[in-house]
Image (cartoon, rainbow, N blue to C red; front, top):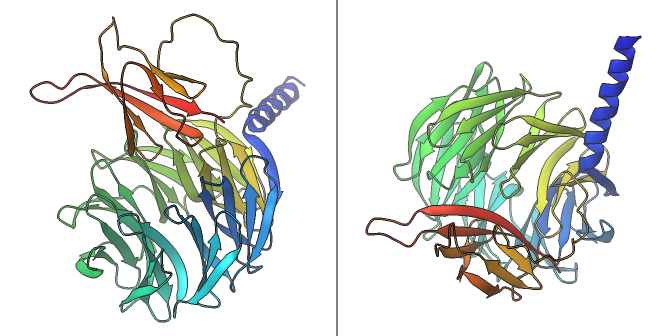
Length: 446
């Protein structure tokens, strides 16, 4: 009897924790596969592979704003901020459809000449690098003109891709020859080929240490190769667990998260030391993972129809949140602080509160001095740092890009879009270097 009571109590507690994170389910269409977010208009785009269309979700209301017909079997989708266009790559018809981010109308559909699989954007020249098969190629698409600049041919099918903004290069994995190819985005020429473990899968880039990680797996030979981007040499080969297949990067703590399919483990690699620092067993095979560094959480889609929420600092599980059937891809809505996952077998998109709780109503203003940076009515107040010392301030977006210099006292930020930002305070530069005194999150509301 006591055991039954304890089990019921534990079940209720887990349900309550899950309810704190889960918000709603939005109807999509057959086999939703890929997601992207448009912060300019606050729309989430879901490519429905089995329905040849894209579901557009209003990020504020969680309602379907539009269903946009595209090509056959849309497999990858990406937003370009410079001209506010969404590019949807259609595997079955070997085309890409361009959706206007303001009107959610297809403005053109162009032929690719290959079956698109994945894509990454180079922000320096606003180009898209699209992985394709039959023929095996990386097709370079200009986001402004929609023109194909070049098709870089490979002997084998390109599978994984990531972008290195430090060196302005794209890294492409080809599974059949166990190779990672390095493309210079200025010349669109392959400048290096790097042998890694068998059958490399997905890639991610470590922005702090300038490294690329690729999960490789074939049979029992399962590794993660660490590539130094300066020399394009493998500097470490790790064995986190069997069959690693997806990787993602969390920049604040410089951690790499590895989804290990066969052993149902999420492994954590320290980006500085190249050591596995945590290994978390999960329920059901792990799929995609998404780090939200500004909140300190990592979200992992699991084959058990749930999303695992990890504390990024401790790698401890904060919650297991039930979602739709077959969660896979994840994206973060920066304006409304939500995480979305495609439910591949459920034809839905599940919506999670990224902070794990319903937002509190604004509290009445008080006259107590602020302990950290705060925003009231479009004015960011930056206090002096510690015992009245003055400090330099810098406002960063969620990607770590510097937006403006801040001075102690009031700073006008009304020109910025609503969303989450970071304030980095540093000491006055000495003869050697400045010292980071604090980093704080601030939220700019409508």
